[in-house]
Amino acid sequence: MLTWKEVINFTTKGNPTPNKRVEKSEKEWKAQLTSEQFRITRQKGTERPHSGALCSIYDEGQYNCICCNTPLFDSTIKFSSGSGWPSFTQPIQENAIKYHKDI
Picture 1: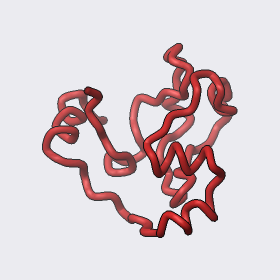
Picture 2: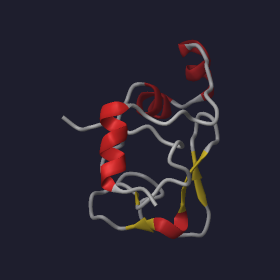
Picture 3: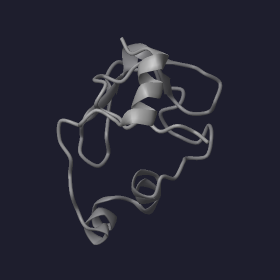
């Protein structure tokens, strides 16, 4: 299980290498994704709080990346943080997501 110290270390010293990386042109991404998916995944956008269809759903399963289908989070570690976005205690693998320090 990742500790906060490890997460902070990733944000300052570099992220773990992902298992796979999909390289596409902006035109290819726009053809594959909806405009909202493109804004969120490719332009570092954010959904409005409490607007996502999966915020209040706790069905069994995995949450995968819309771009490359990499498993990101398991529903068994989802919790209600009150933030308006789905919250998870851990990614499925530490290299499944990229860690950024908020400034």
